[in-house]
Image (cartoon, rainbow, N blue to C red):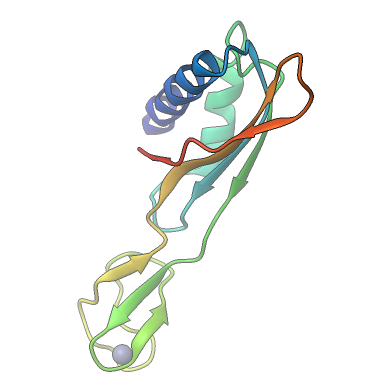
Length: 126
Ligand SMILES: [Zn+2]
């Protein structure tokens, strides 16, 4: 399952950042997964539940934002796109390059250490 490897990559990034900050647990994690990223969010959540026990993500709240997709039509400019590869919803131009919505990244994580709340923003593309 594709989502398991994505979750494993996220875990590796989180563990790396957590180690840098000398912390052992992550309380909350925020991801951005664009609607055109081809990721099934329920499967991704399930993957996190499966791999989290025994790692720094055990017990972490995971929030997943899903930015809308958009493409750049040569005639109409930026237009909303729901499925990658579909024509421009206004003029039917095809193909149109994707502008947003394919991102998959760790936006921020809230770590648990002795110092109260501390937010780390790894900003890493996967
Ligand atoms: Zn158009």
